[in-house]
Image (tube, rainbow, N blue to C red; front, top):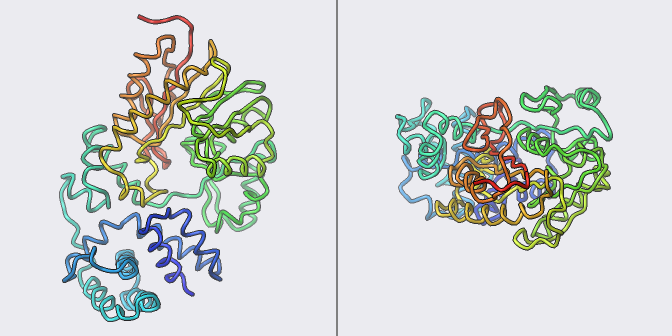
Amino acid sequence: MTARDVALAALVRVEGGAYANVALPAALRASALDARERAQATDLVYGTLRRQRALDHLLEQVMDRDLDDLDPPVRAALRIGTRQLVEGVRPHAAVSATVDAAAKVAPRARGYVNAVLRQVAELGPPWPWPEGADPASVAVRASMPDWVVELLVEDIGLVAALGVVESASRPAALTLRPNPLRTDPDALAAELEAGGASVGRGELVPDALVVLGAGDPAVLPAIAGGRATPQDQASQAVAASVGAVAGQRVLEIGAAPGGKVSAIAELMGDDGLVVAVDVDAGRLRLVTDARARLGLRAVVPVQADGHRLPLRVRSFDRVLLDAPCTGLGVLRRRPEARWRLRPEQVFELADLQRELLHSAAELVCLGGLLVYSVCTLTAAETRDVGEWAVGTLGDFVPEAPPGAPWEPDGPGARLLPQAAGTDGMWLLRLRRTGEPRG
């Protein structure tokens, strides 16, 4: 079994509804690939998903059939082969290896895959991408649905939107959060460098480590031993913005898989109570796993619906609502999500976010802090929700937004992914004063 075989199998599963971050690890576990081949398979899967529309644009110029009429393995093979050609793999190697992989699962398609990929190879470089700054052309080049580009241009402006969609086409570096209860950034960096990795400090979160060449994160001793957690700097910054200190009572709603809630517990020195609420029992088990791996006693997982929380009102010093959202700020990590979103979901989710914020606010004590965060950048889910909260939650007042590279946006702040090489995020911090406004 080769890296292309594994990538092909994973892509077929993703097209069938699986998530790449679940389908690919399962395919890798079932293989006997070495570290280099595992890295190649990972690059093929995520690179193909990130550039799917752009790859289809090239394929459609040479095919005499509609891509949707092909069997999933054939379609996946054509995309893998085209992606390699675009990335500069020599045509003979890209075509022959992809044809061999396709023939194992669809023997009768060998000749067709070979013929189509050879025609694609003749298109470039330079590749015939559509030119212009109009949303449709940008959407093809950035491999995005038209409506996503149009909405981002409308909501955050052309220049910012271009940066967001271009960031989504690039792979995210492995970023680690050192566990201060078991190590420190310098010691962890030295450990990783001794293993052959290249390590730098985060631009947004100085203690974060940006790691290259570390191999499969799942087998890193630092992660398995609870000395580090993979977490983007934007999420680390949100956890820090909660401002929790030792001895406090903290609640996170929407806590699975546990990245932010475990970061909060670490920042508190594992001293206090950190309740991790999630409605999904399966995902909540990931919080339990993270708690055990990191040795955190303060974290208490609770399965509950955010609309009906089985908790005493005004009983928490800090409440973080990590709300369900469209996730347009994390598409580089979840590339398949862009093809599964529907435009109407933006407003459906904004309604849900308001409902959850109303429930979350009831749990905040006098003088306490309510934090709302979403990993998206649409106006409906960010500043519109924030303005609603400021106008509706009568005894809450907005706190000053964090500084650069965050940008003030309505009552909160946004972090564009191109600003510091992080995920995109929006954040609002509200303090309960006990004094109704208006």
